[in-house]
Amino acid sequence: LVSRETKTEDTLIPVGETIIGNGHMTLIAGPCAIESEVQALAIAAHVKKAGAHLFRGGAFKPRTSPYSFQGLGEEGLRILARVRETTGLPVVTEVMDFQTFDLVEHYADVVQIGTRNMQNFSLLKRAGESYRPILLKRGMAATIEEWLMAAEYIMARGNHQVILCERGVRTFVHHSRNTLDLSAIPVVKKESHLPIVVDPSHAAGRRDQVLPLSRASVAANAHGLMVEVHHQPDQALSDGAQSLYPEQFATLCRQVKAIFKVC
Ligand code: PEP
Ligand code: MN
Image 1: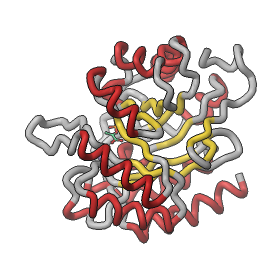
Image 2: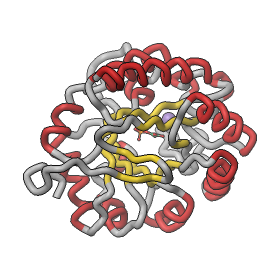
Image 3: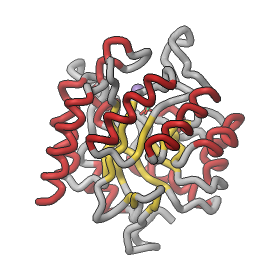
Image 4: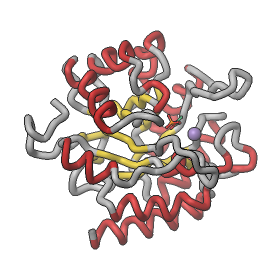
């Protein structure tokens, strides 16, 4: 079902007033985690003004350490709903497990499955029964075939609204958190009709690489970007080092729109 051989025309996924897929450039932005209503609304106002189409923010956070901030849970989801009401931006948020799927699905416009859960097959099957579009991140050590097969799990259960998200893979380097696999963009576009967006923030792990990686992704014809932005990155409860300042996100929007026009 994911293959171009079974469906030649590109899949377009409507979310609110935007369309994700070929011919469109979708900008998804927001903090790593929802920390408070004040924080979320402040960041949402900035990213909306700069030109974002969707707002992102984690309520359930998959943290490396069990002692790190784990997210606000359902309260985070309620804050996301308030962001949507206030700004009109649809919201993307991650679901971490089968047990909380119904809850996340209720609040989110797009349900995200993170890199660590790309092959969580019970989660993928549940996503396949969802009425929401699913943003499926690539596993940090997954081949493109494994990633597309994960998407197949979702589609096989009837949900054909899958957005693929390249977010970098684990390599031996120390100059970035992961290594963005730009070549995944043309390969996925050739193999599949599904839209592909790029998350340069989790690929880089540091904000100084986010703008160049964003420009490169759009030049390589990605259908969109998902970027972490924080109004006070130094005080962020997670991923502050890779979060853009609002002014940097405004610059990013201007630059990638110009590149999209000529590509
Ligand atoms: C995220 O987008 O919040 C996230 C945790 O990303 P990843 O699953 O790619 O690490
Ligand atoms: Mn993050």
